[in-house]
Image (cartoon, rainbow, N blue to C red):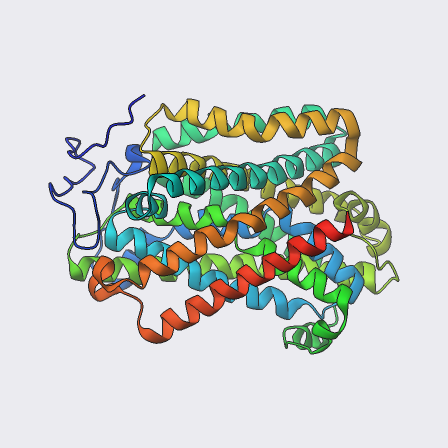
Length: 459
């Protein structure tokens, strides 16, 4: 293990950082996070479509965080209780995510630093340690929700006890190591395949649930009723608060650097444009899946008079009887399993990026991922053994509270850095985007303060 900054590269897949720091930065660039895959994906092709395909991939690794098991409970609760009304909240959340992920990819491409490295350079040492600790807590909390979601899916599909299901989810560490050793594109291909699996499962659920399409279209239009109904507002804020995951911002700012784009003004501009298209298309898939969860809940449970279906296990048990189609519950559980495993794959990468970026500590990837997985699995296993399903449900709620507490500490630095003309040069956010980004940042901050107050008030 080494904590000394690295100022020189000798491998063929990395560039040689400048001996002097670039304008706006205190230190020269360090060894990139995920150095084993840094600039390993060539950007080839002369046509627009070939270049788009070369840049496609990182956005899907980010998008899986927007459809993880932590989002399922809010979608089920919102759809069963209020029908299609909260679809507008899912749409607004997704638009905010598109903007923030676009800023994260731009930061990584333009500066050659991920968000964690940028924070390490800009802030004082005590602030950097504080940001690192709360970010690690947020990653562990998110990983916890994903581990529990996968374990619940294994229980529903195969009758596997929750503690054993929790233990099995640890094996994804070996899978990530194997795939990353074979090439980053293979890991991206697996993630895209799992996203497609989730999408096909919910397309099946949508077809058999036969939603009212006119009501669905109306649900995407914001309604004043959301602000007037306190219970509806609480679930709406829960959807918003659980959508933008802080670790996704760190992740995206790093993995866009796997592409071997030209490090000049023209090359960076092209990379920023294609990275934005990639993440926007991927997040559109996430929008479809999150909306589908709520639509299926509304068309199945709300229509049948079941207005309090928030637990994943309850939804699984009710789907087949209410829809009258064999296999509806199994397909639902399969999508949950794909969602949980997909999210844990990207969560382990985010853990490595955060530790290496904030602390400039380099340890073996398998050890870093083992630590990340243990932080999530140990508490999940203890609660699953001691309290069963009731305990895991409470743990899911706690994980979302922890995520809410950390989010603004990632959003505000991101907006600040990408709006800084000295750090970003010609790529700095224009005035309108800077204003919009700060409005979103303050909105998220106020939202999460309200969520925390309401959560602790209800305990």
